[in-house]
Image (tube, rainbow, N blue to C red):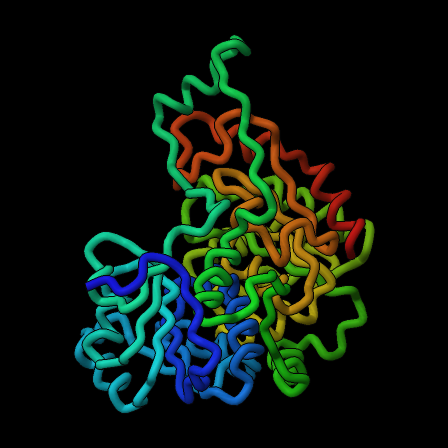
Length: 380
């Protein structure tokens, strides 16, 4: 039975829970966007033990984080019963379920956690003791059909519908804050926050021979796992990198996963001199090393991606050409943070939220090299 279809706060006499489990997001960028909610939860329950259940690939993201006392992780091949065994040992009183998947609600139910809170969704409501109704102001990331895109790019203005304005309060971080508010936490936004230590920074400088570099260090992240509709053309990245290096005498650190190695190699080959102008790090860093390296960058030029959110949460300014996705919903840091620069072209079919463009990638191609160079120089 569903005990509650909306947010309800515990009665004033209810003692604070001693142990709370938060089921975290499965994706890097989404996980970073949950940090304001976790910080608000910590503010509400300063003495409560807060544990985070997260995929193993994101475990190290939470090291040193002030909102998390314990990290419980699971591997991709681990079944739900193995995860439940870990949760039973934690003797948690409350579970706050951030993802919307059925499994994320089933885990705390099977673990016997008495109070289980999450968004109301079909096929999983029965496993929650408190379902939270959609937040007022929520904007869904709904993919456009090919027919809709073709209609939107119709040259006749009267055939188009005006673009709806997306308010800052629609940002994804508010979805997680709204859930935390079900436990009485403050729903007002905070900047996403991650932590690296000075020791970690010194270690990566030593490992990648950066300690002696006197040049300014800039970061470049040309990949995006979601798909090509998020990726600004590599030739434009190269043009920006060459122009910025000529003007600032900087060193570019090129980030990415192993699959981004060909992109990183193209960038490195395109800037052959002087020495130390480019350092290819694609697929060569751990998550903690990536965080420490992003922290030392003056600026990160990146696609809409997990590293974009990580850099912003570490206090590094980011420059982001947006294509198929919406900066109003998943932009870096707090909405409208002047530290960052978001660039997008004024095309009627964006955002479409598709992985691949069914026409000509005009949303990305319409963002000029000159505008990105200017944005980088403004914040660097």
